Length: 266
Image (cartoon, helix red, strand yellow):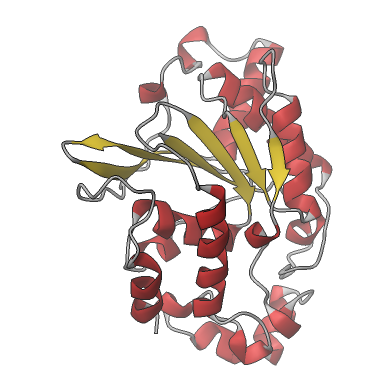
């Protein structure tokens, strides 16, 4: 099974260098181009998801709708929106520029790396509560999934949620997911596949949006060489440092993961 973790395209908040949190900024024109390119690129590499699950915040909703509308398939996949996939609540930091943040809240930059999703000091989510909420939503979404089936699904959401989802699907209990740089409209392809009696999990590919824009728009303008167009999943941009996991039981997530991640992040 393949799970595509997709961050939203560039929003007005991103363009303004603002901390967004739950503020509902829409996409910029560049963000719309990025999302359109993702939909077309996934079609080119035969990675069309059978289902798309998305955050209802505008920047993610619009990204998901554009991806959905630009998949070249006869029957577009079902698209649904889930409040539990919304961005982390950053409390009173929302709407500040990074310059204002540095001047008013220097302690933001003094947090240890493994606590970067903890905003409880500013009235937002604690890291533990945020992970718990995302995991609870993913538990609902994944009910009935057969991870041994050859199928692809997509989550279109926010940077913090992508990090939490990586820990969830990889069944990791460390903080490796906090070290990924997750740009606008980047795609992380997580695979869960049979390995003997259990399952093996890995990040199969990381697709930066710059690569997808170059290929898709190059094909449209005739500036992309045929050899540059990916045909198989092996042609995708590699992660560089895939986060592989050892074989585990045949479940999407092992029961101990939530408690272990919360314990590790303290």
